[in-house]
Image (cartoon, rainbow, N blue to C red; front, side, top):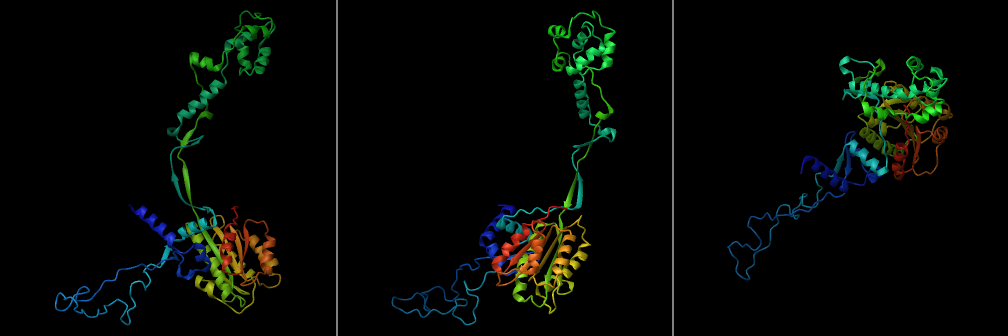
Length: 439
């Protein structure tokens, strides 16, 4: 069995043993994982072991004086290290945890597993050209070095035109022998018969015609003369002359392939005001963290920026983002204003962009309608998402309703509501199934 088969087998066993992905996302310990490694608990970690007797005197029944006699007592067995009878022995078989308590996934594998779990098929866009390569000479152009002239294509184009302009000269000449006809009458008849003859050719041939009144009418001529098709003439005599034009020339060029790097910048915005207590912060972390892993696994390069705000906004690192709490008020637009500044370094033409905001929906008066909605419209992104967390409540916030109503039917804006852990996976699915395909 080769290395590839070993790896596939490892993944197969790990997928069966690990905790269900949905349970892990909704209830598992997410903080045991890092940005580049997702550690999913496995279901079974304790394995049975054999315990060997460590006594110096050999096996059971071995007496001090050698072979025991019938009825002779052999004494009490003495405890051995590791048999569970000595104080302080905590390493007995079956009690400790195994060395590997987690199934470790990279973000790419996590993204594949989440796609399978949710039935998703997100195909990231490549925007920045990473590499240009040349392939076979399969492209053609009207100009190029003489050495790349495509002779086969040149001949085919010339032959096609030659055959298209070919006609039965003897048959057309008979039309000039109709009584009272000249080149003009013969030309009108030929056009009606879709014969590709020129008026100049008829004029030249008319000077060579003998018996000009052989046929009393064109109908008599057609009844007595058989028209030979182009295919029949080619089979009979072949193609004697093929004419070429400058327009027939085509030059071979190598196919140029561009490999585009799929890169993404994600701006996570979170309300850290006094109303965002621990339970709300935990729901935000449980929703946004899997999204970070998922996008890391989907893109070649992923950059994550974290913005905290109360009535003002400032940039923080990831650890502060999920744990920070202030005592100030709330103005959500400040988070979007800072996100707009950050995204100036990541042009929309070169970067995929996601803006995820989260909070409990509390906001200052009119800020949602007058500032946040226009900012979402202004900031180009694959997706804007607002995650509303209201533990234990089935209500809806004013801010979430404003965003949902303003962008109803817009493929680039999603509103997801999370009241407890059971809603987390549904919120992630809502966000990931909302994608803006416009560049």
